[in-house]
Length: 208
Length: 233
Image (cartoon, rainbow over all chains, first blue to last red; front, side, top):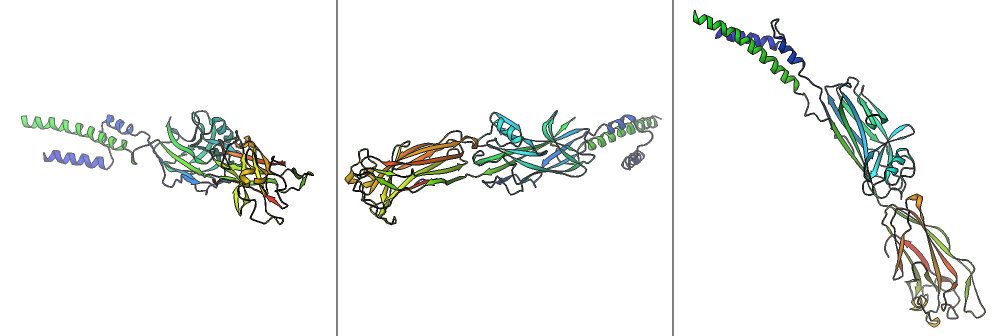
């Protein structure tokens, strides 16, 4: 029994030291290598600032509105598509809430007390001036290096979206801030009635 | 002999079982992630509030006119059609604005609008030759001048004219329908159904309402004040 115990102790010490003996069972090695699968965690960061009141004559807010997400993963860009989208409520459902102004991305806020129509949203996406109850603001995107965030209108799979690439990073933050001034023409007193305007921003990791 | 053979068998069994268990335990430890439970999506709901807004401005007006009379002093004609236009901007689809008019009577200001909401009448009362007096017409003169059948002797120093409204909604601003009005106790309450911009134009007739002008109306400056407000009077 004492001899057997010594052998057990020796075997345990060998494994703890990280070495497998030359007589290790090859079936056990396979079990170790196939045990890890990619996982991801996405959380909205407490640094997000999600509400403000605008100047009713100009549509400007204080400039602090932002969505901040924290991402952790043991996967890579080959395991996931990391996609950020935005939606607004319209009559009959929801619609993509990203647009373009001067080649740069904008985010749309829709009146949830007097819903805009699809036509209103389409007009605001293109920075027009005939868009009741929807307001467009330019956005800025900042991510932890070497990650990248690229606004991709009309993505073949995800529609209007921001594509996040890890480029080897395993964790980081994604910040989308809303500029203080609305896109010219998308806010007009009278066209944009009093009420609460909402934009819902979502960051999702899609397994490939 | 039997004891040594048993011991040999035991030595063969123990190492194989143990080595199989240890890698399995290590594999189980590696599968468990180092961070909290994995969530592959998160959302941020952003809300901005647009407060209520209304602005009323007098965009144009003709607020004075000279007068001529016929030989019997029973008819008065104004040289200019006095008018006023109020421009309203509101972002509240169900908003209200109120039209009132006041003139001096018996030492105080009294409401002086009448008629119907689409064919209003307004009464001007005498503020004396300097135009600063506050006595105005005698008590009851304004009510009589707005009556269906005015009596000349009962509306001294008070002259009624028609007041014609024209309401123009700006469809491009979102106001696709004009507001509607209700006249009650000398106040017109206009109710909007759409937010946006709207012009309210009121034009004073150039001749008096019948039986409201004669020699009971002495020389002086006759005045009425027309007001559009957001607050109910």
